[in-house]
Length: 88
Image 1: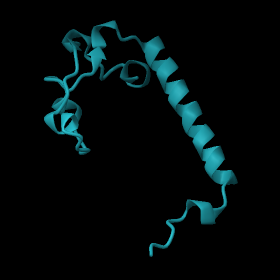
Image 2 (image 1 turned 30 degrees about the vertical axis):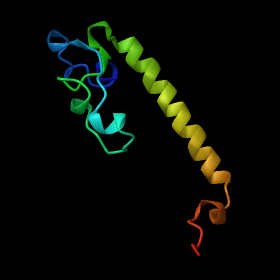
Image 3 (image 1 turned 180 degrees about the horizontal axis):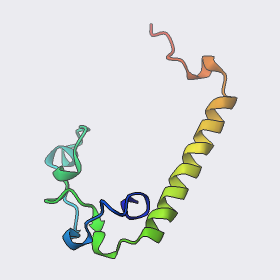
Protein backbone atom coordinates (compact mmCIF):
# COMPACT_ATOMS: atom_id res chain seq x y z
CA UNK A 1 0.00 0.00 0.00
CA UNK A 2 2.93 2.33 0.61
CA UNK A 3 3.83 2.16 -3.09
CA UNK A 4 0.32 3.41 -3.87
CA UNK A 5 -0.10 5.93 -1.05
CA UNK A 6 3.46 7.11 -0.36
CA UNK A 7 5.65 6.08 -3.32
CA UNK A 8 8.37 8.59 -2.36
CA UNK A 9 8.87 6.67 0.93
CA UNK A 10 8.94 3.15 -0.52
CA UNK A 11 12.46 1.75 -0.86
CA UNK A 12 12.13 -1.17 -3.27
CA UNK A 13 15.93 -1.53 -3.26
CA UNK A 14 15.52 -2.80 0.31
CA UNK A 15 12.61 -5.16 -0.44
CA UNK A 16 12.95 -8.69 0.93
CA UNK A 17 10.98 -11.92 0.66
CA UNK A 18 10.46 -13.71 3.98
CA UNK A 19 8.55 -16.67 5.28
CA UNK A 20 6.78 -16.02 8.56
CA UNK A 21 7.59 -18.04 11.66
CA UNK A 22 5.35 -18.82 14.58
CA UNK A 23 6.06 -17.10 17.86
CA UNK A 24 6.54 -19.52 20.76
CA UNK A 25 3.57 -18.02 22.64
CA UNK A 26 1.22 -18.66 19.72
CA UNK A 27 2.29 -22.27 19.52
CA UNK A 28 1.48 -22.62 23.22
CA UNK A 29 -2.01 -21.15 22.64
CA UNK A 30 -1.29 -17.79 24.26
CA UNK A 31 -2.57 -14.62 22.62
CA UNK A 32 -0.25 -11.63 22.89
CA UNK A 33 -0.06 -8.34 20.98
CA UNK A 34 2.96 -9.25 18.85
CA UNK A 35 4.96 -7.07 16.49
CA UNK A 36 5.61 -8.05 12.88
CA UNK A 37 9.30 -8.39 13.81
CA UNK A 38 8.25 -11.28 16.09
CA UNK A 39 7.33 -13.21 12.94
CA UNK A 40 10.15 -12.29 10.53
CA UNK A 41 13.68 -10.95 10.84
CA UNK A 42 12.81 -7.81 8.87
CA UNK A 43 9.24 -7.32 10.04
CA UNK A 44 8.08 -7.86 6.44
CA UNK A 45 5.38 -10.43 5.69
CA UNK A 46 5.48 -12.23 2.36
CA UNK A 47 7.17 -11.27 -0.88
CA UNK A 48 7.73 -7.54 -0.91
CA UNK A 49 9.90 -7.79 -4.04
CA UNK A 50 6.71 -8.42 -6.05
CA UNK A 51 4.90 -5.39 -4.62
CA UNK A 52 3.42 -2.77 -6.94
CA UNK A 53 1.42 0.43 -6.63
CA UNK A 54 -1.48 -1.26 -8.45
CA UNK A 55 -1.57 -4.14 -5.95
CA UNK A 56 -1.41 -1.61 -3.13
CA UNK A 57 -4.35 0.35 -4.56
CA UNK A 58 -6.40 -2.86 -4.85
CA UNK A 59 -5.70 -3.80 -1.22
CA UNK A 60 -6.41 -0.26 -0.05
CA UNK A 61 -9.76 -0.17 -1.86
CA UNK A 62 -10.76 -3.56 -0.44
CA UNK A 63 -9.86 -2.50 3.10
CA UNK A 64 -11.68 0.85 2.80
CA UNK A 65 -14.78 -0.83 1.35
CA UNK A 66 -14.81 -3.40 4.16
CA UNK A 67 -14.36 -0.67 6.76
CA UNK A 68 -17.25 1.28 5.23
CA UNK A 69 -19.39 -1.87 5.37
CA UNK A 70 -18.61 -2.25 9.08
CA UNK A 71 -19.39 1.42 9.73
CA UNK A 72 -22.75 1.07 7.96
CA UNK A 73 -23.51 -2.02 10.04
CA UNK A 74 -22.67 -0.16 13.26
CA UNK A 75 -24.76 2.87 12.22
CA UNK A 76 -27.80 0.61 11.89
CA UNK A 77 -27.21 -1.17 15.22
CA UNK A 78 -28.98 -0.32 18.45
CA UNK A 79 -26.63 1.17 21.03
CA UNK A 80 -27.86 -1.38 23.60
CA UNK A 81 -26.60 -4.20 21.39
CA UNK A 82 -23.13 -2.64 21.27
CA UNK A 83 -22.71 -1.96 25.00
CA UNK A 84 -21.06 -4.36 27.44
CA UNK A 85 -23.62 -6.45 29.29
CA UNK A 86 -23.80 -6.47 33.10
CA UNK A 87 -22.01 -9.39 34.73
CA UNK A 88 -23.48 -11.41 37.54
